[in-house]
Amino acid sequence: MRYLSGLALAAAALLCGFAYVHFAQPAWWARLWHPLNYEQIVLGHAAHYDLDPALLAAVIYQESHFRADARSSSGAIGLMQLMPATAQGIADHTGGSRFKLSDLGNPEINVRYGAWYLSHLMKKYGSEKLALAAYNAGQQNVDNWLASGEGIAFPETRAYVARVESLKKLYRRIYPVLRENPKSR
Image 1: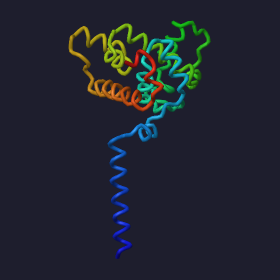
Image 2: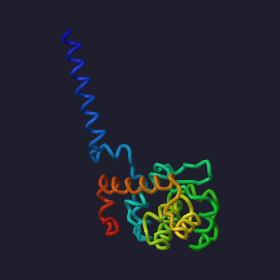
Image 3: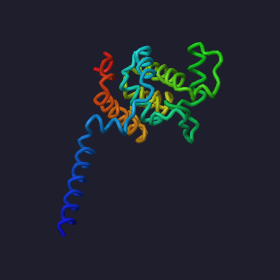
Image 4: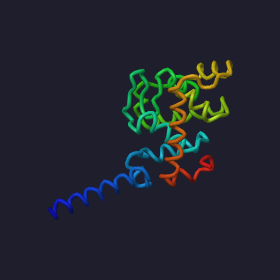
């Protein structure tokens, strides 16, 4: 009987400890669930395109969970889930004359194109929320919402924007290297 009581007490303590760690989310715990793969690529392209590196990491996590081989049912490819036509347009605009679809599986190219595109959207809309909405729902939808004055009309896009902004704060908190960029403030 004492053995079972001790076992129950140990199980309860373990459960309480797990619950604390899960809800408090210390940095070491959060890093287990929110990786920062391709750190140098993320940092390099964030700096080159004047982006908050925590924002870039958050978009990558939301889009692909840092899986370079990710593919969506809509045809988006890679870490930043770029549509082939969007990537071709980015390649053409930035001087990439030999773009091929398989390039999107390359983490360096995918993040470079995605960072360029996110930077372009930030400049076009002057707002992180609108840039993220355009990244998710497309520029035409955001342009239509702005013209009609209705705000972000798609609930899934509003949820996407909120999730990325939450992830940005989390990434900044758990990865000190993402706090060193002036755009992080």
